[in-house]
Structures are given as structure tokens and as C-alpha cells.
Length: 64
Image (cartoon, rainbow, N blue to C red; front, side, top):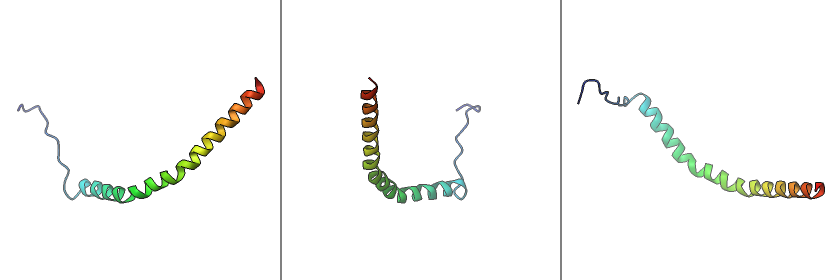
């Protein structure tokens, strides 16, 4: 190994590494609730898209 090659610095165990670990644990624990929110919102978003598409088609039919 040549002297100009840099080694990656490992994070200190008590510093940034602990914060990153806690953030990952919290995101892991919150992920089912985030997914549940997406599952609940999906039908409403889909219905909105169908209504919007129908309105655009009706407006296009009236204009042309």
C-alpha cells in the first residue's frame, strides 16, 4: 500500500455512530406505521386521479 492512499476513517463509537444507530432503530420501529399510512391513503389518491381524469375527458369532449 502506498502512503498517498487514504484509509477510510471509522466513526467513533460514542459520537456520530450512536446517533446514526438510534436514528436507524427509530426508523425501523416507525416503518410499519409509515407503510400503514401509505396503505390507507392509496385508495383516496387513486379515486382522486380517476375523478381528475374523468373531468379532463369531459372537458375535452365538450371542447372538441
